Length: 142
Image 1: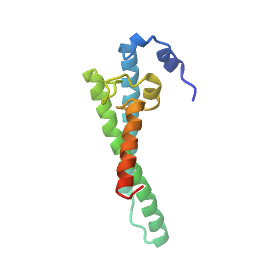
Image 2: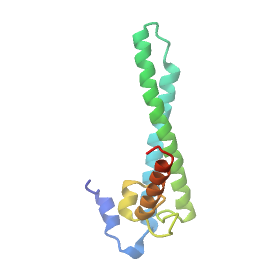
Image 3: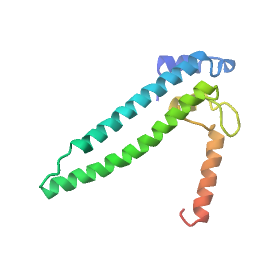
Image 4: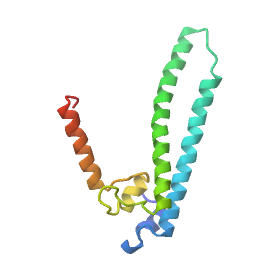
């Protein structure tokens, strides 16, 4: 995926500029935009559920209930995303944003541009996924 001019400018900054005011401002704005988008979508889902009138046609009702199940799964994912966005905003305020919670090392701009809610550097994330895989396998789930 090509970077926007603003993202390219951030990536071109020297390593000692990591998480400077401009970078933190960029990520704060991006997180706030994503938060607003998610909140808007969650409101739309709630409104759709509230506005739906029970249809006497069983086929229409079944179609609505299937769509509702899909919407609720999406809303559940977005609710978790919302919590992660809020946690990332708190990390910006605390001065911890962009640093791995496990190692303290920089997470890196490319990873944060893809996932601004990232809390772990790539290596720590891979270790976490390996532990989870081994745990599932040990329990017979994998």
